[in-house]
Image 1 (cartoon, one colour):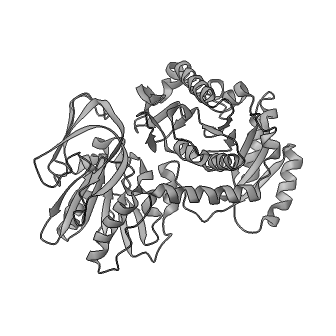
Image 2: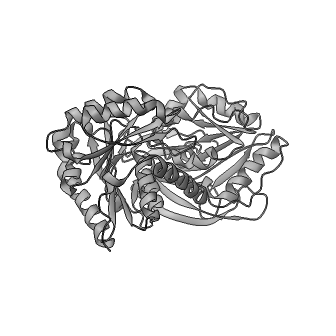
Image 3: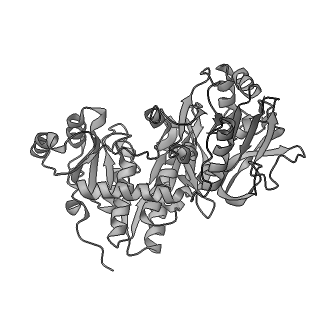
Length: 495
């Protein structure tokens, strides 16, 4: 089990690295996080909703992601409430102060069910678990669902990860170990210091001090990796600024208050010629080659925030000057004419409604049944050239109706129309992971490059999954080079 001294210590990626290393050694690693709180989601082949970080770990393990790997998912709504998802299905809404009172028992049952399902399907597999936040939040320990309760239940060996980049790494580690109960302390098999910059020999004295003070071996010091890995939550987006100042194209992404599924933008982040700027309402848009309105957990609230920040007139001015605007899921809904939420699914009360930005001829009605499905189809836009095969997934409550128009895919995968005499275009799709489709992504970028008279990029691009897999290999290479796994793994599972 990979635990962390805090949120953001690197648990998710170290778990993914461990899964890839075990896979290389001929084992069947089974990634598992009992409870995750995230707005970055994935949809498995059966139409179940799970955290994207467990999907990433599944790919690292060479397995198809499935909701049993993340049986409890909490999706914050920004008003001290969260949507509760058990084994891929929404089961209600919880207020923070009542969560453990109302949801502890059903949550623990969902966790046990997920474990049993994984172990039944892979009896020779090795569970690789990820903790959540810190394992020693003393006000929550009695009702802990996914850290040390699970570690004790399964009698696992734990790796404690601390992020030295944040500073105070010695206090992080010593303080965490000091707050463990006597029955929990023996579960910690080793310490991993993560994101170290410079020569590792400079930390030798610190390593010796930690082992002497804690009695726990430091199994490795992971270097700072100059790679772009998916963030776990939107706070990590701030760390992505200014990485490619010489890029040909600059794209603005609206940093909405309830931003969700921002992993949709990872393939664009990986394009050497593209710089993403995460902008807030009121930031200028005129110099950007395109503006992306991403997914939102609370579309009506984010639309109101967009307006309150003065972004609506800026978007209209940007389009009138020939700009390109692209919306994904909730972002697509905002670009339409009307949004209605008669059942109060958006958290703003029954009967809530709002006028959209009126940039696309769409009307959206939020329905109780959530659309959760993997989707394949042929994209008719960008309209130049033959239609391209694309795939992705849908995850939304809203149902959008479009006026009869040639500017809509028959399957509803996308909507687009010109905007103004200067050549602006407004478009959108319900399809998450749209940019993972290499040829489609390059064609979309080439339309932007044409406007700047830039050389066109090759459209013969593989799916982003191949690049992600290479990234996981490089992560595992570094993990094997810098971490001694022997005390952590113990015996190899028998076959």
